[in-house]
Length: 262
Image (cartoon, rainbow, N blue to C red; front, side, top):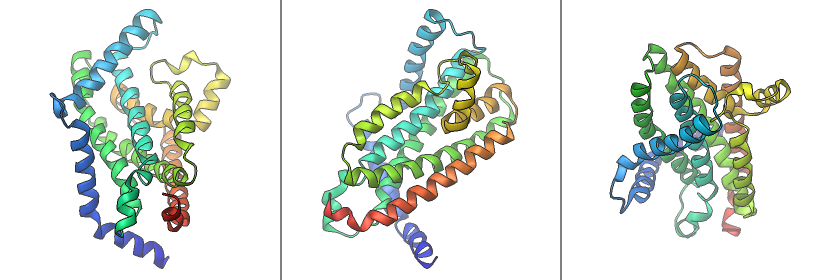
């Protein structure tokens, strides 16, 4: 317990470093970009437009307000994949600094996931544009989207911490995880309605795919103007906390050996 308190106090002391690392990631991402931060709004819009043309015209998924349905699923899932993929390299990519000075190692993973959260906040601008043009009715329920984003952030941070420490010892993690996220994307109803799956597959997705619950909660608040299913919310919250506890435990258990492998 004392160690946990000390580490939390350390996180507070290094909050300025986390902020600087997040700002550095954002600046590097848009460095030498003509559109700069505007691209963070345009990119999800352009991707959504392409996916809309493909899946609404060629495959003809009959989903009410499909542009809004699509951009929500795309933005939520892209945040998770971006955050966790960056987390994979958060320790190995900062090996030179870790060998020279003492810095709490978790701040690098935390900063990567947080910078991805900032990108998700930027993409809310793109969502707002789509909502206006597609006729989504704005309600007070949309304010609860922040709670869904908090669930998703905690889940991604826990998974990111686990992947970050695993990548130090097993460099093939990056390739394995890339394949897994591709399969994960197709197993999540991002561009197709859940009804396209068989009843058995729907039960499997609901039972083992946390991204289904985060995407569905977001869509329920925005597109239906209603509260999400309490069971889905409980599942998302519990899984987020479990992943954070497990990822943090694995990270703290192995961090003293990082210096031998990076």
